[in-house]
Structures are given as C-alpha cells and as structure tokens.
Length: 94
Image (tube, rainbow, N blue to C red; front, side, top):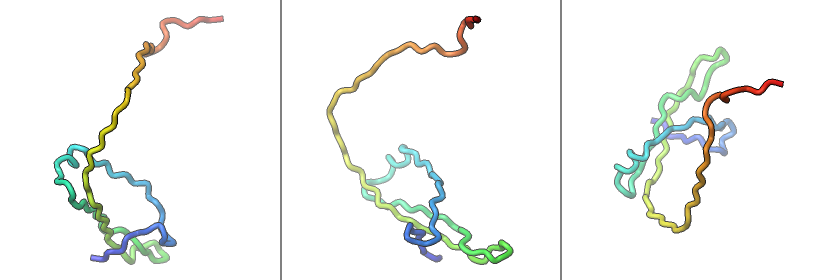
C-alpha cells in the first residue's frame, strides 16, 4: 500500500469539497483517546494522453480523538412570533 498524503503544498493539490457526515451517536460509542482512520482507495493519480488510467494510489489519514468536557454559564434569550404559513387568504387588486 502506498502512503502518500495529499498536502496543500503539493503543486497539483486541489480541495475536492467532499464532506463525510459522521453521526454523533457513533462518536459517543468510541472510547476516549482513540484513533480514527480515513481510507480512500484506488484514486487515479496519473493518466496517459488518451485519458487511460496509468496509476492509482491509496490515501490514509489518521486522527486522534479525545473528548473534553466544556461547561459554560450564561443566559439564553428566546423570542416567540407568529408567522403565517401558506398563500395569503386574499389578494388585493388595484
């Protein structure tokens, strides 16, 4: 397996804008101080002039997960307002 992380310093690096949703319930089940790995396989890194794939690579990232209890005190302000939903009951014509 080739371990070559794509870094912002690489001349051909481009952010892909891909998001990976992670359920908080899944994170809650993990033990404290653990490692999470993200693995992406068979990424095309080279093509020939005709567009055929000539090289693929695998990428791995590891993240250390550690929970930290944070408490804060303060006030919560709420506002209640009535907002009509749907089309108006009548239209006024000129």
